[in-house]
Length: 52
Image (cartoon, rainbow, N blue to C red; front, side, top):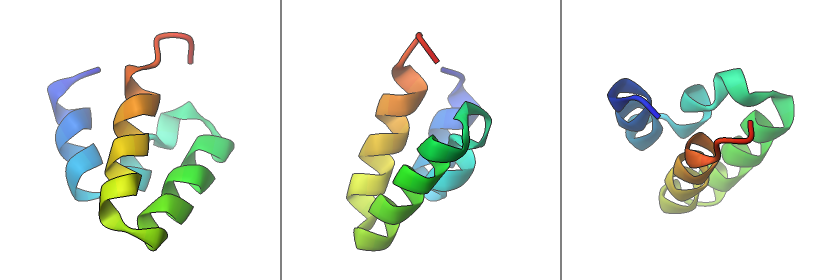
């Protein structure tokens, strides 16, 4: 997880997970619409997952 991805996850969570697949983008986008904090948390969790 790079420094720039973390900054991007804080300011625009769906753009931070753009390389992780369509499902991840959709989930983070919907959570960001529901509230900014859930979107940021989901983006950071997805970025921190070494399996993907």
